[in-house]
Image (tube, rainbow, N blue to C red; front, top):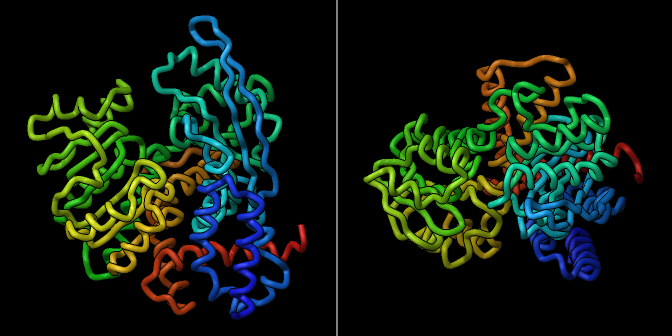
Length: 448
């Protein structure tokens, strides 16, 4: 066994012994380790410095309670987390997720992935993540406000414009960011750079709302063009009906593709004529309704219970934009059977390891989340730049910068894959390209 293999096995075993009850985090680390061996073989100094041992342990992680009062006057308590994973290339940057499934394992998995995603953007931001098991669905504006104010009362002790800059994620949209920022300002005074995803009237960036969905399609477009194809006339299956999915549908249509599906946790809608993103936007962002309402408003659409990935229909591109591990191995085989040529992750780690293996074995073009959905954090970093300079760029300016960043991410991933002997493996290429920048910064800064 080579020195690199022995080192990877040793670090993996140590993590499994230390964190046996953190399956999502262990999955993220394992997925990363399976691709990084060529780098360790070329750079044994990383092994000597135990770089992976340091990289896989957060610089800081904390848990806190969030007490709040519901509309019936009852005191509720939720659990919250913030993991500040790595600051080698800049302040911690990563979203806040409000969802019942949030726990330390999920926050660590997201924070670990965020390190490399942020590195790939080429912008000076480190990796972090946070959230709470609070569920904003079905809550009144007053309940959400009281929860977020309590949440920020504790979180504000640990963040700052040059230390840790949170953003939104699942369950944290414009309403939640507004309440969070209001409470931070109340306690600390006005500092626009403390949160990203803010409203345009108080330091937000144009194109931030669209960034992850638009960025996903810019990445896919770059990948297809590199293989002599375009998005024109492609049929696309999209999962999810949140922020990422809505704007992925919009940009796909603008680039000539037809999106056949969108979904939520109950089921999905199918329309061979193409999904109208404005209808989804009205249902989900304005009315906060269920996706089944779409079929009541668009006569050519049909609603189906269950997972969209169990739906057997011919299409060209798969864009999972809902949540982690939404595609398993069996469903991945159906993706291949239905003729998909490309899978790109709009959500974080939406495919299980078994599913990813199916895609790679079938030689599908596969864009991992840390590359394909980096558009959101890229524009978040651009929002930080605008806040620092007290400027506001036009939508077109931000969108052009986003497009360039996503094109660079694809090409840097492809180049890294070629350089390290795994040509065409964009998962390995993204891991390697993101890792190298962080690793070199850590080496330069010594044992810290």
